[in-house]
Image (cartoon, rainbow, N blue to C red; front, side, top):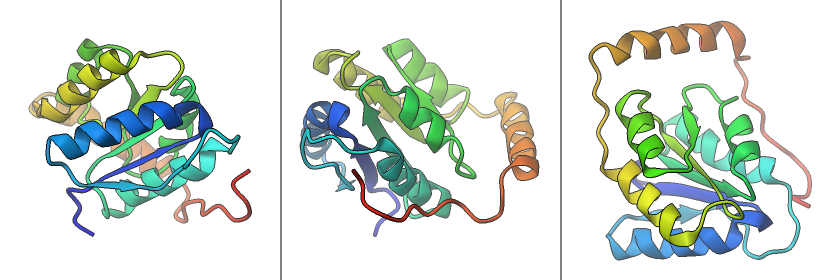
Length: 163
């Protein structure tokens, strides 16, 4: 799969917003790999976060998007994966800054806390903003150093049902 393909996942709370985001990505010509969920039936978000964050961590994808009810749970687990810089964005300013200064590679959104139009604006800002590098490279190197010291060599691969 092309690493430029954006991987996207949601739980039941983010399903409806995910549908809107997938549609927008396709409209603007960005390939999408949707790992689920496929309905509003209750599921456990860590499974979907692990698929998307795992793909980014392994280099299968350059970027990912995760959506749960608030975006908080998705961002917590996604940031457990080596090399993932997941950012929960609730405004276009946050989307711009997390790309420009933190080179975030996973966008987290709240399906029950952020309206569709706002989420689409956040998405488009996040996609369009380039990493500035420069002085920010120092902080990212420190994050990578800390991550190497704290994260186990084998990432979690969930087993069992997703419910």
